[in-house]
Image (cartoon, rainbow, N blue to C red):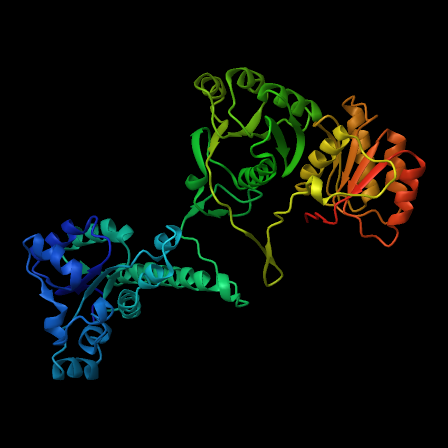
Length: 510
């Protein structure tokens, strides 16, 4: 048989009618018989176009409040029969089953209903049964049937109708079948994940419909794609397209700055997912200036983020720095005019958006899934390990440093003073190496560590770190504790007037 099929009939059962009218009119102009039911049937009749009610085909009314309308052999036989199979052809003739060549469905909006905070009953009623069954049947029989499975495909289908006058190719039908199974699998995944929030069945299912091909991946020889709704999180005001690495850095920046949400003006500069500068001040301009002082070398080509509006004075300071991305909840008009002076500089307004509660990454031949580290160390978490208690300023700096430490690659040590990141040792295989790296780096940028504090993402197995820190001028330490040799570090701190607090929470970031 020819790969080309001339459609003679269409079944339409949709939730969204947006863009449907031109399709219905074109089908009518082509002399294609239209079958429908419920609200879609009324919509077609209101257009003044003839439509055959599905009830006339099945000789059975819509029942159970509309839950059962199309679930009938005369409907599904018309969709699933194989036109090149003599037995199928004989059976549909024997049972007077009408041939259906096109199926157009748009499912009940299950995800939108869940997101709206609707009641469980309302959500359950938005689990489409007939529609999803029609999609699967029509897509399975793509050799003979074209399935339009979403309002998002109405326009493409109308183009095919106009160009082919009702005739479709096998390639077109197979393409729409693939789209249909994408819709059906996504729909079922959303339903499962809704139920599994309470049932906790140990199964991993994820489906994201939005996908954007990137210029390349982490390196130019790697392909890269971002699956997610970037526009739901940001308004992109200016600049080039974001790269794979840009997105990773933006993710790190957002997670870090969320620790300082609602606090005094805070500015961070990140490079390769780690903060190289961060400060909290009375003004956002001073916060930027002091964040930059933390490491003006690494800041070149970095990601900048603020927890409050960026004004003109701050933008003037930023403009002299080459940076990839600037993120803030808002920008003054004058600030935007200045920052747009570099054509490639990406400017993002961060919106209020809920982030996923789980983290997912590939591992071996599968994936690892874990809860996000949503624990932020606060004053009530602290236990005072040493007889020498930290001052009020030191406690503020310790908690400040702990927030940065949590978002820095392990093994890590963070040194801070007066709510300014002095330096950090990142991604080292030894915590001693991380500490030495941070001390050397702080010295290279002329930081006086006398009176500074130290944060560690995990416990100290030996007292060597507190000894090195104390010799550098560190006066207070925050760490999780939990080593069988904690007392050795505590004893050293007691003997050398260093205050130590423990949080009981480790913050590895691998």
